[in-house]
Amino acid sequence: MTKRRVAVLIGSLRKEAFSRRLAEALRSLQPASLDLEFVDIGGLALYNADLETEPAPAAWSEFRAKVAACDAVLFVSPEYNRGMPASIKNAIDVASRPYGKAAMAGKPCAVATTSPGALGGFGANHMIRQCVMFMDMPMMQQPELYLGQVDKAIEPGGKAANDATRQLLEKFLAKFADWIERNAR
Image (cartoon, rainbow, N blue to C red):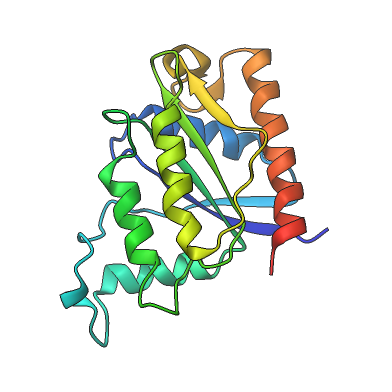
């Protein structure tokens, strides 16, 4: 089996973010067939077609190149006001352009969302799914990963706080690895 590079886009820009904790936990549990690579989205200027010149802004070009070099994309995001954070939407917008050359187009993907509340980022999860459909990204449907009460489930530093959480994350990653193999172009 080929080792697949996965661009991990973390929706919260806060250093101690719960979504960063989840991403770190996933990376620490990744199967040997995956290489989860965090791709920073915090320095991307808001997408503005007027800036789509030759060359494109350096941060956009670097981001697009990093995503294009990966085999798949994993969105790890909190939920803000029942939706996805602007940082994730902006990253999707930047990666979707220029039209016909989208860095994410066709890449298998999955979404993991978090919340200190009980719903685990349900609204954000589905908004992300809706936005990436435009780029014909095969989205893993099952298992879904909505991690509620993330503040109790993932310790600071990115370690699953208990066996049930660890097993949930391992199952998600194993299915994602299979999904990538079936859908990578």
